[in-house]
Each structure stands twice: as structure tokens, then as C-alpha cells.
Length: 216
Image (cartoon, rainbow, N blue to C red; front, side, top):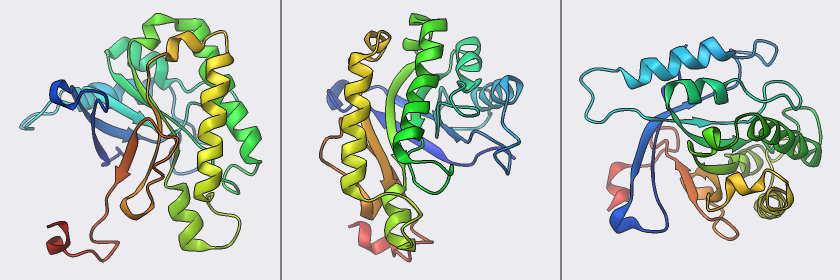
């Protein structure tokens, strides 16, 4: 099943001369974590997206929820992106209670995976990286379920973003992320503004019971 989530990203630094990146969001596995996506899966998906017909804009980018395959092994989407010339909006999974390990361990594994492939591919990978989203809809899950096991709160997202930014800067491969915005993605009511270089929004008007008239 191909992802139907579409994203648009414009540079936050110079909107007048912004480049628009268009593409789809891709998960790390099929249905369950044991069935991880491999190089061929990502390669096929990226090529399929780039060659869609009768679309107003061409897909040239991919948003990833996570940098890992299993534990701290890098996602094979990195190699597929290099081979297909697909830009990447990187993601890191930071929620508690989903990967069955602490937030800190999860973040360290994400950073280790990213570092391994920057060591392997260097500038070839860096040239495709648009930015990094530290988390995805974590505050939404934290607020909606209120069970202490789903998502993380806004303060934890801010602290995690600070931690990731600091560890990337201190890493030997950190130079490959220089100038890349590091931010957060959530549904429209739960954006975390402070300590974010960029803000990603996922919008679900139907499921959130929002009327079209509210956009005015």
C-alpha cells in the first residue's frame, strides 16, 4: 500500500524566493514493525511518485517518519533517495510507549542511524536533505489519549529538539546538517513553536470535525 500523505515545504528563511518541495510521506515498515521496508520498496515508491501523470506538480521529495530500519540501523530509503535523486525531509520517532523504549534511547538510536549513513554517503546524502522533523504528531497523541503512554508533551518535544540539535552539532558528521532546519510536525491545533527552525503541519479537517468556513 502506497502512502497517500502529501507534503509541501517552502524554505522558512526566504519565502519570496522559496523553493517548493512536493512529495509523499513514507513509513518505515509494512503494517507491522517486523516487516520493514527495504531498498527496493523505497526505490519503487520514489520512482512511482516522480513519474505520476496528470498531476499539477511533479513529486521530487519524500518525507520520512524515522531514520532507522531496526534499532540503530539506517533506513534503506537513504540509498534509494540517492539513486533516484529524491530530496528528503528527515524524521525521527520520539514518542514513548510505541517503540517500547525510552525517549532518550530512541533519539540516540535515530542519531546513530543518521550518523552511519552520513559517514557512508557524505555530501551525496547531505545535498538531498531538506531538513529534519523531530517527532510527528506526538503532542496530538499525548493530548488525545491522556494515558501517559502515547506521545509526548510539548515541553518534552522542545527539550528533545534542543537535545537533537546539540548532538548533531557536536557529532563529527554534524557539518552535513549545517543550515538544515530542525523542527517539529503535528496536527494544526498542536504545533510546538519555540525552539523550532521550521513547523510542519498535518491537516485532517474531516476527522477533526472542522468546517471549511473556519479557514476564513
